[in-house]
Amino acid sequence: MHDHNFKNMILDYPVQSLEFFAGEEAGSDLLEARIIPVRQEQLKERLGDRFRELDTPLLVEWPDGRRKAILFLVEEETDTSKFSIYRLAHYCLDLAVLMKTDRVVPVVIFLRPGTHRSDLILGADACAYLEFRYVACNLASLPAKRYYESSNIVARLNLPNMAYSPEDRLEMYWAAQTGLNRLEDSPEKQRKYADFIDFYADFSEDEAVCYRIRYFSEKGENFMGFMNLLREEGRQEGIQQTLIESLGALLDVKFGFEGLTILPQLMAVKDIQQLKQMIQVIKLAKTPNDVLSILDKKSIVV
Image (cartoon, rainbow, N blue to C red):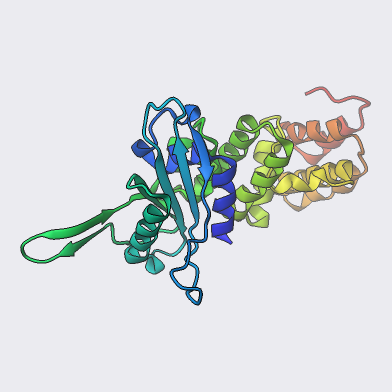
């Protein structure tokens, strides 16, 4: 599942992926390069042999010749205990033979925290005959706050996979979804990667309600994410239901059971803008009756 998710992301955003995951090896001129996905299944030495399948090999070429072509082998590793530097070295050597190049850069994205071997040295007392290293991106150790305002969409999509405190989860999610909305123009890709963020954020129902209350109303914007239900045919009904849930949670927090007694009156409101305004009304109200008195008016001015 994770392999598939990251393959899609890297192929959809190859420049941003290499800039984020490969660091200085990627350089700063990838926008002038041509990036070509390479076959994932390597050739067999014998017909009965098993295929060795690579995650995402990318050949980067500069048409103007400013740099020699580089072959990036990008691997996603979910469980560090299953990572094998020997297997990775095999992949790189096989790919170098297949593509007839020594300019190969292995990049490993570690999704979960854990220890992993960083280099391989084959030799004896007199000499090291083979040395192998790779570029490691340990997502779980990167501070998410550092990338809240990043212009790299791959960094913003991976905020849920980074390090953050529990109290920052809502803000982290907001930064991820706003980054997607502002850095990606395609509605199809917005929907696709809103699901990516949702998958790795893994919000609970309580967190979803808190997020709707804090960001859906206060920020004045509706970004993607678990609110994808609003894209379905019953979009208006979905918006109304979402707002009613938010209003109910807010009434409960502020007034307790007494506040919930006025929820049926709010549920009767069909106007979406009026329901949005009621969130601010509840925040300013001192009693449930204050909310009802404003609701009874023909227009709401907050």
